[in-house]
Amino acid sequence: MNRRGGNGAPRWLRDVQPVVTACEQKRMVPVLWIRRRPGSLACSLLLLLLCVSPLPADTPPVEDWEGFVTLALAARTPQDFAAVESRLQQLRRSGVEWEPGNLRLVWSLVRLAQFYRVDNQWTQAARYQEQVLHLLEASFGPSDWVLLPSLDALAAIRQAEGKLSLARQTWERALGIVASTADSGHLLQVHILEQLAGIAVAQGNPQEAERHQRRVTEIQEQALMLETPGDAIILARQARRHLQAGHEALALPLFQLAKEILMESSGPYHSLRVEVLNSLAHILQKEGDYIQAVELLKSALAITENMRGGQHPDLLPLLQNLAICYQKTGKPGQSRPLLVRTLALVESLYGADHVKTAEALIALADNLRLENQPEPSVALYNRGAVLFRQRESIPGLVRALTGLARAQQMQGRHAAALRTLQDLLEILHKGRETEHPEVQAVQRFQAELAGEMAEKQQIRPAGFTHFNRQLQEMQSRLQGLGQGEPATESPRPLPLLP
Image (cartoon, rainbow, N blue to C red; front, side, top):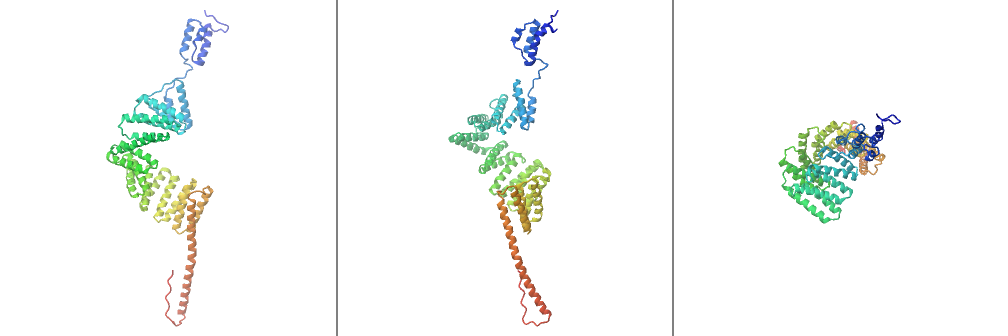
């Protein structure tokens, strides 16, 4: 027979109820509570069961990494990444173990590191990049090439933090991986050695920096014997770094070597060949060798058309650069079809009211003016100016209205050209662009037009006076002949008109 207390509940239930409440709140019961409420054997066993097992009714299911990965890969805004980090902290607090073989998880952490790196939050970026490195090491070992991008990113973060010693150690580890898994002259070492040289300079060790630079030179000299497209990619990457730093003289031979390797070891439509040809053409343009640049750009255009079709955005820079080269060689007639095609392609891709369309209109108008065709160029300049006004683009308006004034000058419409320039100066003044570098050029052009108009106004009346005098002399002679007066002398020839 169960003994009941004053509230009518069984005694064993009254003994267990405080423990059940504690389990619901804390999901764990100290053993001391069992000792204080011994109860029956069944009560003790129940209490022990509660101590080791959470109550299933109120316990949420243990989460895995799939939800975190989905959230991380879809993140776009700072608020999204804050939610991603919050989810990660919840998972770590709940004791969920890392999954080294889960590459989607690795990429999710890479995205977090990249977000904080762009936001200049170096501590958080370093923390997540280190975790990426640990997961990759657990999956691929400590010396696999797959670690190199992560090591490079981590070293760059540490350098941005000002932790130069840690950055140097990280790049030295990357250098060791390349040296142990490839030949001693592999071009992947070049980037790492250049970073180490920069750190040596920052740490006041010019001798070490010079040693690294000598090694870079040796590796690049050894690259003259390379023959695979992969090596051409590395050469082009190194040349691109030199080009971005403004060292065209260093970039040119590397691009040329990459081009030769691709021509010998790849098909005619290798995607890298377009970049190499375009980069070479860019360097030659800066050096003034437009004829050779034209040939390179024509090849790059043909490859892109074959690979991408005739309506791809990648064609635009090639068409524009090739048109500029033709203009520089004094062949605007060959530029015009390219610029007409550019305008049609831009309108189809971006619409008739886009700023890129306005730029294409002005480029075609400039070319027509070079061909001594001011009438169609005036219409194009006006269309471009309208679009630039809508977007309040001062540089675009300067180019459009200045070109329009030049075309009006070619038409002999000096007054209209002066009004166009005055309109441009008022726009610059309203936009507080009085210090704009084009203001003085516009003012000089304005003075030139005003001088031409004044000169014409001075010459025109003098010419008409001379003509009127000759006309009056002719009329008097004709009147004399009509009256039958004898000619006393042979008539003098009329003077020529000026």
